[in-house]
Length: 331
Image (cartoon, rainbow, N blue to C red; front, side, top):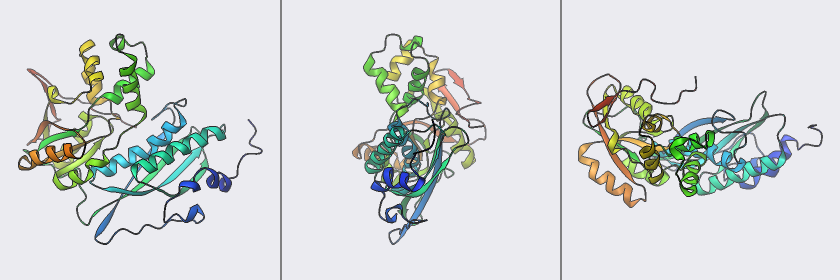
């Protein structure tokens, strides 16, 4: 398709993104934005990029891609105990981009910004030399000195996760292999549930304040539960033990496991869960579980951190395993 007649960068920004720019963005008419944290608060900054054919399929709905681009960053903020305050966007469009696609992408991004309370503050739009990609830098806010790190877990701390694990990994598998044997008897409703969990991450913003009050260490589960537990343990100079039978699964994931128990390995290493993984001191465990529930987010204890430097141990009754490749890797 010829590029003649396309919108200029300025007109593209004015048409698709300026309408939902937040306070401090100056209508996207300046070269920079302004963020003023509340008195006594720190800014927390995170950045994630998603790339076509790596983090999403080219034919995924454009609105879903827009939502995911912001959601994966807001998930990081929630795991730090931070509340979102805004984001900036870098958008690299391939040569064959179309206005209807970009309009739908912007609508999905706008909806996510509104739902997550994370307004657009600015960004950049360029031509990609390869596939489409988008990078979001998100800003959050915590009371001064209270951001939760991933490296402070201690031996004896409970390992807790929010929500359910494995739905997105199974949804991705269904997206790639819809006739897979373990899903043969699965209802359409459950198939849709799993694929939706892959398409639309659900950052646990509602749990952010509780995580900040009680977690000794926390991070979001993005690359895979096994690998992310290993990352937290290594950063903290310890190891961990996990009971596979305690990991929370949705009804759809349990059906998949009943049909093929071997799917447990894909579930705990598959990634894209975007749940919060945290270390909770034993004396705070009951309060943490009760307050996350009161905030509308389920949380489950699945193991404990302990002394040692080996890879985390995963148990299923008498069966023990350690995952050498416990998560997705970009390289």
